[in-house]
Length: 166
Length: 185
Image (cartoon, each protein chain N blue to C red):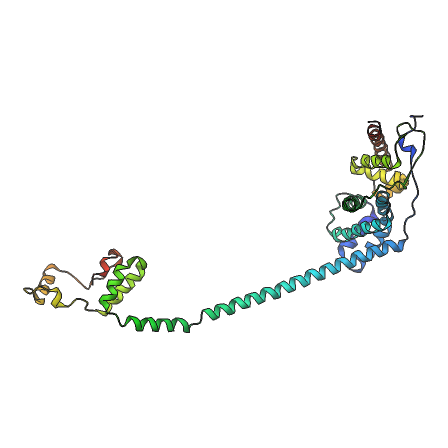
């Protein structure tokens, strides 16, 4: 057995017939066709995505308008207002003072300024002034001490609880 | 790269009817070589056609982005190789696809080859080609399996005949050593 010849000289390749030119033309045509078909599918997909996206957005906006109906809050406000009118202001203030934690500071300040503006007389002179002191005595005291009630005051300087002392 | 290849690439990148015509010309020119590359492994004309179709689709899709860092043939060879291996793996999972032993004939007279079937020898030969650097594998494929002359390979790859001969010589030496090692083990 000879080892001198190269191994590959003993492994010979048989001839194989190659297909005709038309065969390769067909493959080329099919490749181009598939690529064009792929582009159409991509475009269709993008279009349908656009349509579905628009539909969802429209539904969302429509829903927003439904739930944001301006009439609804007014109805609720009217009903609330009518219920509140059955309560005295002292009852309301007492409720607020007991549930102070439920309110924001800004809400309290706003409420306090509204009350002050309306000059609600929550405390009657009769309940407040002792029998031996008159209104004129208080007026003289204010003048003597140079207390200016009309000076603008920053409500934020007050403690939250102080603002409820009207 | 050859002038012919550059012209085809340019036209295909431009697109339109001229691009399609160039792609047809490229397919007819390289098709037989790629076909031979595939069928020696599959020995199945239907499977070879399917694989080659995939190769053509990938070529048409990706050629516009081809950066010409290698020759056109090298690029096609690589796509064909990857596609063949990939599909073959899938096919082997479904059916036991045997290696094509009708592509080569084993001539008696070499002690290393004695006692081994053609299928076994071919399997080792293909394994040996797998470990070659791509340039050497390409030259070997074209010279050994496709019986091209060095002049024809030079026209195909743009590499000088001298360099091709050197590559082929080195490839043969490596393959021979590999087969000896595997079959004598």
